[in-house]
Amino acid sequence: MFAKALETQFAHDVRAGLTQPDQKSLPCQYLYDSVGSALFEAITFLPEYGLTRADARVIQAHAGELANFMGSDVVIAELGSGSGSKTRTILEKVSRRQNAVYYPIDVSQLALDRCAQDLSSIATVHPLAMSYLDGLREVSARRAAGQRMLVLFLGSTIGNFEPDAALEFVGEVRQIMSPGDVFLVGTDLVKPTAVLLDAYDDPAGVTAAFNLNLLGRINREFDLRQFAHVIRYHEEAQRIEMHLRSRVYQIVSVRRADLIVDFAAEETICTEACHKFYLEQVETMAEASGFELVEQWVDEEWGFSENLMICP
Ligand code: AVJ
Image 1 (spheres, protein in one colour):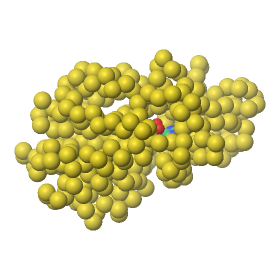
Image 2 (cartoon, helix red, strand yellow):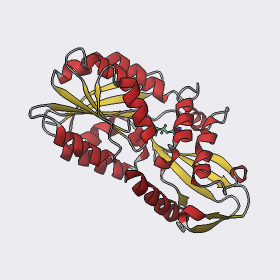
Image 3 (cartoon, helix red, strand yellow):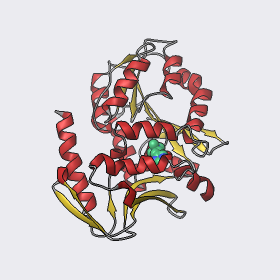
Image 4 (spheres, protein in one colour):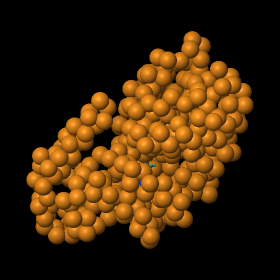
């Protein structure tokens, strides 16, 4: 049922995105089919892309502190768990105190299956193939009276939201949570432009493959060789953008979306926006959403922070 709804939504989003008059675009969540998820996993090992390793260093260094902070009788939910590799460290610390109960929430069934397989030895895993907010409402409804909720939103996925949408999203998460609950949010920090351009356009071409796969995933009528991976950094907006640029004028029919679309030479499709943060901006966002920011654990080597927010 959820897969059918996804298919229809996918077709709708492709049609809406590729018929936009000004800037064609495609929602970035569609980057993560099985090929895309595997390519993203490869990106996290690239020397130029230090984000995931920085996040893992911070979690490694503070997981014990986090478990102490939460005390016992905690339920853990994770938004966009992916394979859950970073979460293992936190679950190991929590499971020293109690039977850890973990709800990974992700649209990718493949990622959820991986999560359940890898983490069932250290926690009771209840995968939820749902949208982030629906999944969180489900966890909140299932938790026992007096049980505190720790919500993980790691890896700077929040950077995919436009700033206003990020603020709105954090506010919606706050509404679902209760006093005493904790929200841990990972944010990639602003850093030199050259470092960012290398991280999103690596010389090995892995990110290019990750990006191009999105068109291949829509349908093989897209001639991927007629599109190029392009990165733009808007310094003022602190935003990296991934685009696919059409090398020539071309017409493509996308049967699954009942669509025939033409691309001018040099015209682009925006496939992802990744916003970077200053520590103060995260504090402002937390407080504007009704959270109290109690800790910012920073990785100085790459420039990444995990932000611990509590519901007062
Ligand atoms: C998974 C959204 C955090 O923004 O760095 C990596 C995705 N895109 N390389 C990021 C991504 C291109 C990544 N996030």
